[in-house]
Amino acid sequence: KLDRLGPLFVSGWSRLSQGRERATETPAQATKQLWDIAWDSLVPAGPDGSPITNQELLRLFKESVDESYFDDDGLKQLPRVDKIPLEKGFFERMNETFWRYGPLVVAPLGPLRTVSVSDPGIVKYILSQRALFGKGFLSAVGQDIFGKALITASDRELWQSRRSATSAGFHAQWLRSLSEDFVLCTAQAARILDDRARYGEVVDMESFFLNLALDTVGRTIFGYDFQASEQPSDSPQSPIVKAVYRVLKETEYRQANLGNLLLMGAPDALVDVAAPNVAEFRQSLRSIDAVLDKVIGAALDEQSLTDEEDLRRRSGGTLLQFIVDLRGKQVTREQLQDDLRTLLIAGHETVASTLTWAIYELAKNPEAMAKAKQEVRRVLGGRSEPTYQDVKDLKYIRLVLTETLRLFPAPPVLARSPLQSITLPTNGSNVTLNRGTLLLLQLTQLHRHPGIYARPNEFWPERWEKAFNSTGTYPVEGWRGYDPARATGLYPTALATDYAFVGFGGGEFQCVGDQFAMIEGTIILAMLLQRYNFKLVYDDLDTIGLDMAATIHTRRGGREAQTYRLPAGLCIEPTVAYRNPIRTGLRVGLWVGYPWAYILA
Ligand code: HEM
Image (cartoon, rainbow, N blue to C red; front, side):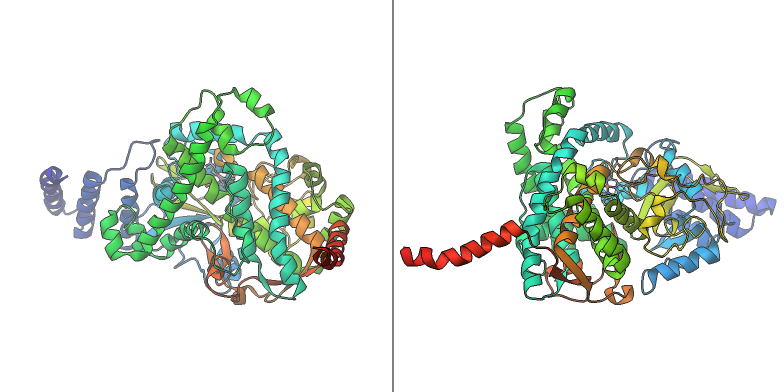
């Protein structure tokens, strides 16, 4: 790099002096040229279409400086906001920003300049043009959290091979068999709610769902029992569960704390001394990897290489065993570890967050709650163990989950970067983005777009039962509208909504666990609604407090409730709504029989 500095200064100086001679360039323009040359020489932009390298991400700082210092930027025509609000009144402020500036704005993210997008046409263009957009920034900042697997793989070949192996594993037969695991985990976790309901105690539902979702993912994806639900949600957890929560928290810390981001590649020795917080994160990763290593070892010991067709006919088993046994797709232990870490993180907090907000919205909307409970009664009757067929029949419950994801998308933002210089398909103005520009698809705004959704901030699951088109004061040109006839699966996909709802993403990177999540969410919600009534302790979002990272979660509840006793998070008072007659009979039988057995003994 130093070798390049000599010629760099020579060429910069000659440009400066030429500028002076020609008197056509102001000193500011000349300085800018020197600045550009320095960057192009030290941190050159990669070739068009190639993945954005970590080093290239430094150019994001350059863009920020270009914009603020040199006032030189290809995005001049776009409105700018000082910051995207995260504090009180988050959704109201997001609405305000939308009304004032529209669906395409330039906004800062710490020291970086980003472009926020919430127009369905542009979101569609970005998500469906795989060759033009990569996950650039996300790949770089998330790689040590997720490993090099689906979420962070910027290398196309690696992504394709992991995607085809993983999505083969999520085949229909396996998904159908999962309902038994979900029922078992929910029934186990519900014992905590039973106790709380009996004594009229308050429960932090976010922690409850986090523990439950961790148990289901561990059991179904790689056959490990975290036993997270064995603990009341506000009690201290086992070291491994704590480690998982610490790793999840890192996505949040990296947004809020530049130190965590900058220390990403630093050696352990430095981090141990200088940044105990980051050292703790690394230690947690090591604990998780040790568990994953053990389950991978066990799966490899059991390995029996089989063709995909035959594997698809095999029922039960874990996803890990499927991937290990898949003939022709063998991978290293390290790759398997990265795959599992990705699935563990991506499939855990997202589900928990969706269920948390679903219960919150249902508890706040008695009519929707009554309708949901009625459907559960009608479909399940007296049965307490929903099956896959029930999931298909529980249409309203699935709409409740969809509507929850519309209002509280998990993740709330999708990050993309163009792989070459690109002109966005906007109406009128030509917006040209440089390679590597950080694009943030703001799902909280897209999903509450006033030109698409009537009463956008209201929880109204019935909206998905009928077709709707763009209307009102903010018509969206070119949007095809929504038609339930196009939503033939378990939820309305990006295609069915013409990219107005992308709760599970869209295009090639669409969530690989979407069916898994819908089956799991529907079963858990149905089982809980069947057994309990829920009453919110706090219903105001500002009191509950919102935090945003990989999902939208409550500021004081959730993972922090592992260490603090019942703070003002999303606390709910469950009361038993349904008693399983067989279990009640058994209990009574034991209660009556126990003293006699004791006397006889
Ligand atoms: C309600 C629950 C869930 C929601 C809302 C959700 C949402 C999403 C979204 C929006 C994306 C796209 C991200 C992007 O485009 O940048 C995604 C990707 C992904 N999700 Fe999910 N997800 C959920 C559950 C799950 C589950 C249960 C798993 C696995 C067990 C999973 C695994 C993944 C993976 C591996 C990807 C990356 C796919 C790729 O890039 O090829 N997700 N998810």
